[in-house]
Length: 538
Image 1 (cartoon, one colour):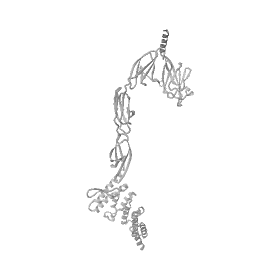
Image 2 (spheres, helix red, strand yellow):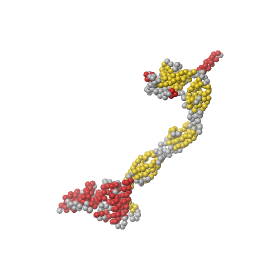
Image 3 (cartoon, one colour):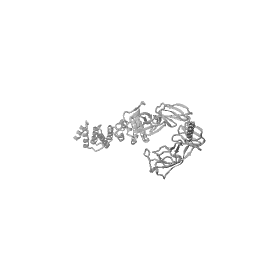
Image 4 (cartoon, rainbow, N blue to C red):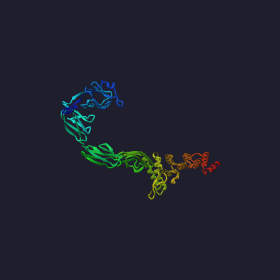
């Protein structure tokens, strides 16, 4: 019986003496003058130099936990603890002692620096007389713990440790998404361990969307793709579903504590943007991705992505294109302006086009007297020649538009240029030689360049020059045809020979005439041999 009482006494004594002691930090600072960390250096697993904490204490058997590198070097009343760069906490333990979690920032040290030596001085506290230890094990972790209005930091193992005077203490434990718990703790002898489980108040929601690749966001934070289920804080939230190329869907919700809800988001629609297009000049054709959408000004709808936009001017003899790649990224209206052609150039072509059609109308349907009608038509053509330097060559390749005697509109089959020339030729509409203006015809032909085989037109111009006695100009035109075209080449040789033979605007030159007749013979002209024979008989 005495033995049982003795064993019970020993157990009670052990319980009373367990964790009857504690540590207290007397000082912690960076010893700038101590070079031990550099002289007796260590490196971490990545090869970076360590920092050294010299723990000064008379307490034997201390143990250390944290980002410690290598073994503890136990000196007389001093422990050398090497820690890796960036370490912010150190935990010190010993049997029957309340563990001490030391947060370096509490002492003005942000983190361990390499090759720095720190001095930590500990002193012992007796908990049996006036103080005791309190350890709170709280779930969830990282809760906010206040004891007597003082915020307590969590230890490395997630528990909250503090040395308190004996008596009652007010604890307040809170965490986002959980109901706050308050309680009075009455500390006695030794160490008290208290488990605290906070009650969750989180709401549970499930979000779905028909678009399988849509991203789910709650209050701007991405939660998943295609759908999401989980817990969130009660209150007001914004749910958004978005996918590239689609209009996002947004829903505002209000959730009560512990509420469970399912939200089915609508199917996302493709993004479309209005494109407002204007041009200078107006009336240009608009093509988007090869499809025609009318003429400017216009407004078209384009879907998300890149598109090829082409603005085409094909009017009044002007042919211009402007290309642009446009991007549709949202629903905002885009306003695009294009200068397809400078306004002054456009105005010249518009005038010339109007003058030509009016002149052509007079020429063909201006009245009973075709001769006077042609003269009135020529007045309009003369206006075109006056501004010819401002016109594009393409102007002279248009078809003429006219209205016949029955009021029906037609287009000519030939080019506008050809029709215009007919009024300038000496043989056109019964005009006499003096009325011909081959200079104007030649100016239009030069403007065309090499865009058309114009040998037959140049031949008529040369003929007009010849009939007006302008031999030099005629020979120049005939020679140009001979040198550059197989068409009319033998005829040109005959005409040049005729000019020299008869002295039409130049002095007679039989030798030069023979030279050109022989060229005509080489080209196969049927009259060349007779002309040569007649000259040789003289």
